[in-house]
Length: 307
Image (cartoon, rainbow, N blue to C red; front, side):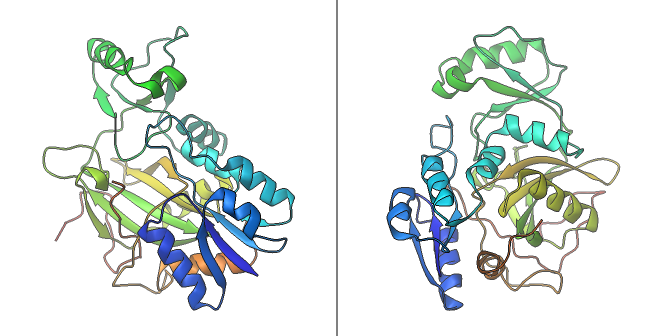
């Protein structure tokens, strides 16, 4: 059996996934979707890691090739449907809501169609977004109008519109959990840099491994199940009552080794992911982030210490 990580980029995470599979004795390589069609045979495994395009106007090419691989007997992990749900934030919102998971109210604002003004304040963001780019808060109707006027210069906005998402009061941090094969294999808090409210590492957020509380793990697992994703990042926002909202999913999540694994998480996310690829399925460029579970617990009642 061969394991191919199907992606367009030789990122640190993609390379580490291949290395972890080889360490387990698997024939593994990083290939683009077109090469995967000619190099994989029935019974092989393809771990799909297609990301959002640089222009924020959709998903990288390759979903058609993944469908052909699956039809030909290749075991495709993170199939096209899961990647689309994870990367298309409008579908993410609908999927999470249908699954009964807490998620900010989300409205599509199209440049071509009349839309009711959403309840303010909101966060305006691309439908296919990443790295915190083109994301801004709008507290008044005037700010929303001005932001939408600026977005008319963006090709992604003209093609897909923008999402107006209910603003959850920023608390200075969020949490990303990595789910692989139906298990939480790593987690980190992303703590905003001074003067910033967005928690993206690409915007300078400090990333600190944490031991996620049970409620966070349960929400992450439920989000992954709702998207039918085999390897996915789940972003959670803390709420004032000590809980979390599921904000976003990431079908090409980046992570790196934690130096302090715990008993509740595997030694490295890569190892668990390679095991997932071998076993049965369970029911910028971007700055690399640390998602191996560490020994520091997190309290949702306050911002965690960066020290």
